Image (tube, rainbow, N blue to C red; front, side):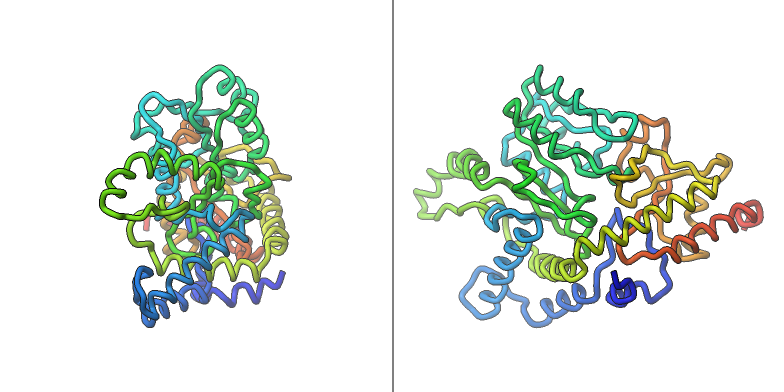
Length: 400
C-alpha cells in the first residue's frame, strides 16, 4: 500500500509521535475531524423535526446505517447505534432479557466490558479457557452448552491483549447446534479484517467506532428476525397499552432499541471513517499489518530482552503484542513513562481491562504495542533502538 499517502491523512503523525496504542483507540484521519467540526458549525439540528437542518441530519443517520451495513455485510435495519461497545452489550442484555441465574458463556480473554452487562443482572458467567495455542477451547464450549441451559454465548473475535483470531464461525455453529444464540465482539477484529455478519451467521455482533478512526461510539447488530422477536417482549408487551391509550406510535426495528437523541456528531464521524477505510482497503491493511507483525516478531526474537506474555498463532494473528522484560528488575510502569516522555512512544501499560487473562498466566500488568496500517517498520526500529538504549542506561535513567 502507499504508506506515505496513508500517513499524510493523519495530522497527529506530523508531531513525531510513535503511536502504538491502536488496540485502545486508533488515530482519526483528518477528514473525520474536519467533518465533525463542520457538522457542529453548520448543522446543529435535531433529527426530529421538519426543517432543513433536521432533514439533513436524518438523511445522514440513514446513510450511516447503510455504510455500516455495507462494511459488515448486514442489512441497514439490523444496525442499532449505541454509545460504545460496553453499551452495545448492555443493550443486548436488556433486549434479550438476561436475568438472575441465567448462564452466559464468556471467556478468560474477554475485555471486562463483556462481563459487566451480564453480571450486574445476576447472571452466572462461565469463563471459557484457551488451548495452549491461545485459541478458545471449543470442546469445553460444546460440553458446557450441551449440558447446561445457556442464555447466550458472548465471545470476542480477537482479544485486546493477545492478537489471535478466534474460530468465531465454529463458535456460532456450536451455539446454534444446541439452540443457543451467539454474539461476537468484533471490536478488535474489524480494524484489521473484514466482517461478514451474514456469512458468520451470528445472531448479534458489536464493534466500537473509535477502533476504526472514528469517535467513541458503538454499533450493535442483530438479525432482523431476531430483533423483531425481541421487539415484542422488550417494547410492545411492556408499553403497548400505555402507547395505545395515548396515541403514541410504536417504533420499528431498529430505532425501537435506540433511546433518546442519537449522538449526531459521532454518527457523522463514523460515516466518514468508514468511507476513509474504504479508500485504504482491507487488502492493503492486511498486507501492511502482516509486514509489521512479522517484522516486530523478528526484532523481538533477536532482541532477547522481552517476553511476550500470551501465546501467538503467527499465521492467524493481528499485530497486538503484550510483553514484559526478561529483566524482572525493570519497573515497566517507569519504563513506559520514560518511553513516552523522552521518546514520544505511546504504548499501553496496564492489565488492559483483561484481568482474568493476566491472572490465568500468572501476570499482573504488561506493556502492549498494537499496530495499525499507518505504522511503519522504521517506527518499530526506533522502538527497539530506544529499548536497547534504556536497558544500557537503565540505572542512570531510572535515577532521574
